Length: 204
Length: 204
DNA sequence: CTCGTGTCGCTAGCAGTGCTAGATTCCTTC
DNA sequence: GAAGGAATCTAGCACTGCTAGCGACACGAG
Image 1 (tube, rainbow over the protein chains, first blue to last red):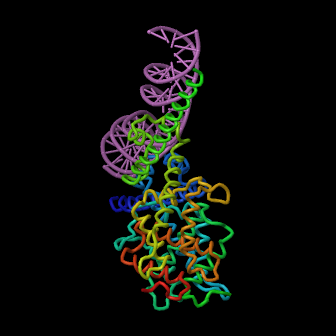
Image 2: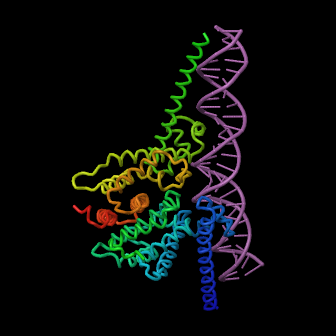
Image 3: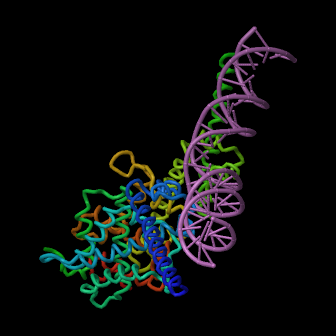
């Protein structure tokens, strides 16, 4: 019976781990959805626990604290962004740089709370040289690929950082209502024209 | 005696209003200093009240709520930034654009909490066409003046928004440790070179 | 000089926050 | 079935922003 018991024990343990992983993901998804629907201020541990139909302490058996939940949402959001950028290929005479820029800004516009968790709220996600999440590297890699065609003899990583920073600045200032919507198109044209070695590569 | 009484009453009222205005400013300054020293999380109404040596309700006789205090700090910060940009004139062969960019980034680096209140934390400051504070217009005006020399035939306001957005993106991503410090100089060179009509105006 | 009057600031409290210790319930195993 | 252990919940702490209502003070009138 010991082998049977062990076998059974393993499968039961597997089921438990699976259910636990599902609940883990449920918490992340619910937090993201609640934030998108009502903003991060509305994401309290009580409301989140109520939505996942468990009590608060269950959250703390999965995450060290609320910050860790937000961080998990942010990291998975980076994966979403990376996939979106990978799919965003230029159509017609559009440059790859423009396709990436438009996809990035659309992501920030459509999912402002998620974007906030990823790049605005301060978190202790390791962005330095050490253990930075793969999702982040993927997203940045897609930006690098989009910048590469216009790099010329410029430093590719630094140029990508400039591109990213500009997009991020536009995204956040727009979200805060600090830029004039009337300039939306002109602004992006100017940025892309300036970064494209000024050889008017991007004009249609 | 009625004229004497009225005269006295006016001066007393003046003194009271003056003291009240001083206390109003004291609250703003204390909130800003506390935020700069320990971050905005440390700025609670209790701690703030303790620092100004009054009880909490006094804060609410000056401001509608904590948000209004942060907003006052932010608006005065815009005045500081405008003054700093006005003073930042190019030295030697430096372009005015570079002088403004460096001054802006230094401001964001040296006073991160103040910068946060101004441009990161969402607030209901009216940025639209209606009653936007004068301090804000001044600061943006300084940026416009710095961009003007390189505008070429481009839309000046939109180009300034691109310049501002890029600086803002760099400032916030740097603050969050999301950019590589090794690229700091290259990044700014690339941005200024790209915005300067690509005529290498800014290369020394 | 004394007495209302009204402004001013304070004490105490509310509802809600993130988080946790201890009791309780449920399931597995013998 | 009973013992053991893991998983979950209840109840509570210290804190947040904010406010009602009380008490003390300075002021002007008689």
